[in-house]
Length: 386
Image (cartoon, rainbow, N blue to C red):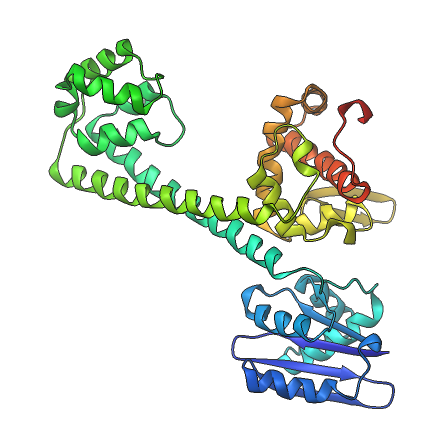
């Protein structure tokens, strides 16, 4: 068997090929000519006797992975943390170079079960890119929401407590965009109410409309032109981001048509959340047990053991933050829609667990269920839960 390790970087990659008789170590450019050079080294080797490993290092390795897949080579992506620990176990010396890393990855491949990731298609990569883009767009929107709230705390502090909404609804954005100052809001007419009623699909009632006008008339806030400028600027960005988020979600939904999943059969998990889980994990069937999925998401706890004493520490928080965040967030939604999940959450709370800790336990339970559903191709059935 031939063990091949790649160290990935922005402009060039390093490769180490360990055969039965000789070792090859070389660098090649992250370009078409560099990839063709790589093929010349691979040509004498049989594809069935090649164990290829590379670290999961973000987008720098995407072109190389696509190239390898296109030419029929399988490969395994490795958590860089595992390679680091493996390297530390081999030597106490601190020697880190690209060539040394490629050799270390090659050696690491000898010590693990080979699970090829080559079958993950272009569409999975696209799905992962889009779900992460959505996450970042929402994060950007949240920053502008916070900026808007800071302005309103000065010019109209009564507004947010009265509206009682997370973020800013389409109705709120319309009010603040077209009637940004409290004095203008206090002078709204009944014709404006009809527009607001339609935008809110009937949720913005007339009594609420009158109460908002009275609050605006008697606000303790102080309006300044520069504050209104900050407010209108953030609103403009929020509106653009809302459109970008909607368009991104449309593309995610379109891609998900190619990936039927049983995750959605769990009430409380929507299509976008299912897409995030699939894109971050890839093929769940590659995970031999739920513990591997927990570790991959960084939801396993650190363990310290010495002599007769053993303690469990905090979450290791390695792996994908997007995956970890999604799993914990959907735990709340699943708990609301499924009595058995709520009972499990309550059990953890009665054991003295903090709300966030109880949610993490629920997320772990979800992972075990998701692993079962995807590996057995079964729909979720709450009657089978223990």
